[in-house]
Each structure stands twice: as structure tokens, then as C-alpha cells.
Length: 513
Image (cartoon, rainbow, N blue to C red; front, side, top):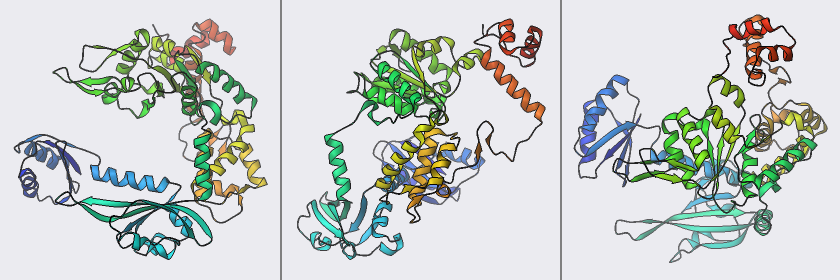
């Protein structure tokens, strides 16, 4: 259980709050203090009734404005953010204390040393890294950042050393240790080449198949136009990659590209995040993402998941280029290009009233469809080779060949998750490298999937008749917007007008008025 207490800073505040917790027999696990007027408390889970009594009592404490439950403490967020960063860094990173002994090590460093974490923690870094005396460097006054060539066995690396200083009570600096980063010559060379030959726009989009080449041709032309763009396609086909490429190839490339996942934006905060917020006295509390992206591009991923209220405000923005912040009366002009994506059928959602029809026409000025990986199978092996090279470099793993049986399997697999599924499968295989020289089918660990049938489902419940009715209703909902009269729809499906009318009535499918 974690609480966020909004409060004024005063002596004895924490003590008064702790007394409230003590009266309920609650032991504090951790406490975070913020200079921005917040205090964070962590303690063991308590029942809803106890919490309902506890929170009003804390609010009554002098200088406390409000209290609410939160999902994590600021210190927890910082800890796991650092842990995630270290885990994903391709360079070997060590944190050493003032004696030169290892305190923290990332996964890339463990791969470089070919050791386990418990074997290196609290050991001297000089046991493995030769060519520089870390403990002697840490006794110098002052300890300055260094960069030099070092060796681990017969392999050379560029070592960058940064001292860690902490302030004491008198604001003087105390040496706590250092962070050491090792880069291989190949990685240093690759970074230099990347700086010399930066690729932007559609240069990073792989297209071998004719279908993907046609999409790329359309996308390049549409990137130069400053009208709304809608990218459709199944999940994992690369819609965000294409949106970013369109931005990079446009006249707006020097300005921000802001991607927003509408599905991950709760209705309660969607409008505030997108359009900003004004306090009761007219002060701008928060600038929205449309304002932050001034001059650039806003990418609305999964636009079908946007709340109804946000849809109305987005429609107005597209109509006259202005919007109002939440709680404000001032008209704000938005100089942005809007790119949207969806894996859903927006026309069908308009028919059912789940998506505004007028907004659909506004965002559908320019559009193209991203083909699934099943439709561009010629690209599967080149994509696999590209991901293999990328992750082998990132994870300091030897580059492997693709076995013949694996090539056949990759080519025939249905790829329901498309390029994202392929990318994740290669990452998993490289990260779990077992020392083999070839990439095999077993290492991919892909779930069984039959094209046209889906994943093998052993938990299906219901009858064949129910399944057929569900499919029939879904088909009619998709087709009715395109064939809006029962006679047209009946002709399309090759059945009688009466049969279609009865089925539309049974499934409660009606025209949107």
C-alpha cells in the first residue's frame, strides 16, 4: 500500500502522520519526501474499511491538503528505471566503490566477462580489466573523468570512467565511487558511422516484396502533404514506424514527433493530456501534447480507442485548427500534422455509434494499408537477418546463421503478430543464446498457429451454431456500411432480401441515423 500526501513543508509533519499510522498498528516500510509539496508513504496492505478511516484522519493533520493511493513511490520508479536502462544498454557498465570494487553490473558486462553476478560483486574490477589502475585513479585529488584503452583477455575496449560525487551536510563533495563503461572497437566504429551517415525517413523501412514497395511508394508521396493521414493494418505491422518515417521525410522533421497510444490513455485524463489544463484562476497548469508538438507531428495510435469527449475536441481541431484547454476559454491554435492508426474497422465502428462518423472523414483524407507479414512473406528472411544482426550487436552475442529448416519454418509460419512477433522472437532467441552456431526452430519458441484457424484453442466453449451466428453477425456489421440497403446487401451475399432483413433484425443491426 502506497499513499501520496499533498502538504506544506513544516517541522513535525511526518511525526504527526506517523502517529496516525501508529494508532492503527501500521508499520511504515518506506517514506519519500519531495521538495514539491508531497510526502510518500509505503506500508503493508490494509483492508478497505481501515483505509477509509485512515485517509480522512491524515487529511485532518495540520498542513496536509489531500491524500490518495498511488501505484509506486518515486524512489521505486527511479530504481526500476535505472535497472531497465542498465539491462537494455548494449555497452558493459560497472559501478565501483571508492576502493575499485564492483557494486553494480549490467547484463552486457556479465556476458563480456562470461561470469555470473554473484561471482563479480564486491570483487576488484582490475581482476578482469587490464590496462588501467582503477583503485589508484580513485585516490587522486581531484578524481577527473577519464577515457582510455583497456583489455579483457585478448579483447580491447574503450573505457570511459566517470567519478560519482555526493554532497555532504556542508554541500562539499564526497567521492562515492565511479561508473565505468566499456565499448568494443566495432561498436565505437558503428556509432561514428551512424553520426557520419545518419539515415532518416523511410531509409530504415525494409521492403523487398512488391506489396511493401507499393506501400512505401505511396507513403513517400503522402509524407510531403500536410493533410491528416490514416494508417490501417493489423497489430505489429509497423504502423508507428511508418508514421515516424513520414514525419522524418516531411517539412516538419525539425520539430517534435509525439506518439500517443489512445488505448493506454484513460478516459479520465485523455482530454487533459491531449489539450492541457487551466486552473480556476486562469493559470495554465499543464500544456497538452498538441501544444507541445508545435510545428511537428502528433501520432494517435489506435485512434478507435479515443474517448467520445476527446473525439469531439479532436474534430474541432481538425476543422478549424484550434482547441481549448480543459477549464479555459482561450482559443489555442495548433500547428501540427495529425497521423492516426488503427487495427479496427472504423467504418463498422461508425455504424455502431462507437466512433464519430464526421471525425472518420476528417482523419481519412490520406490513407494506406500496411500489409500483414503473411502478405509479404518475401520480406520474412531479410527481416530475420536484420533483427539477428541488430540484437547480436546489442547483446554482445555472436552473429549466427539461420538453419535451413528454420528458414522453411519462418517462411511458412502464419505470423499473427506480424513484424513485432518476428522481432520479439529473434530478440528472445539471441538473448537466450545457448552457444550454437545456427538459429533453429526450437530457439524461436513460437506458439502453434494455423492460418485461417488461429492459435490452437483447447479451451473453446459453446456450440458450432453459436460460433456460426457470431461470425455471421460480425460479417453483416462489417458489410452493412458499404451496402446500406437490404437489397444491395442481399445481392452481394447471394441470398434473398427477406433473409437479410430477418438477420439484420435478429442481430439488432441498424443504419446509423
